[in-house]
Length: 150
Image (cartoon, rainbow, N blue to C red; front, side, top):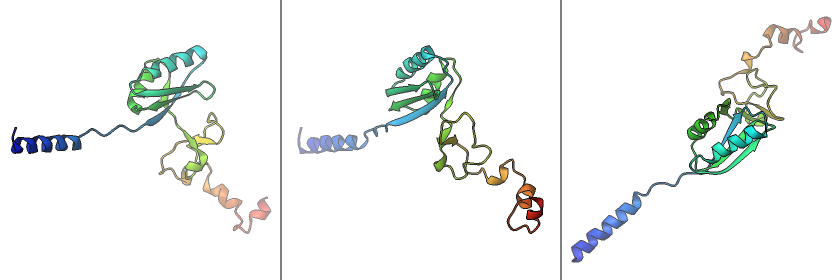
């Protein structure tokens, strides 16, 4: 191997190191899963632990929540959870401080954990609430006849 061969080898070696795959990011996937007992929770934890790349699995029976952390994809975790024949969806709740309008009708959910509301798209507006504008106008401070009604 002469000088030309050595230079070619080194250039190939350096160019192949640039094409390395990017390391996957650690993700946390939260799921809402209908679980009735400890046996259900154990079954869900066992199935989710088998997902390739899962580092830790936490199951909260009280909140009906399962959290998978590791080098996982949400679709694969969701598919694995659905194989348990339980009702499964991605965790729909967020802290009410993270939502622009937490009192919109779509965000309110009786079953939500404390200080949490349902995740709603940013396109949801206050005008989509169940309160009619006529009632707001009747009891408004700007309405001079509001005192007579009250």
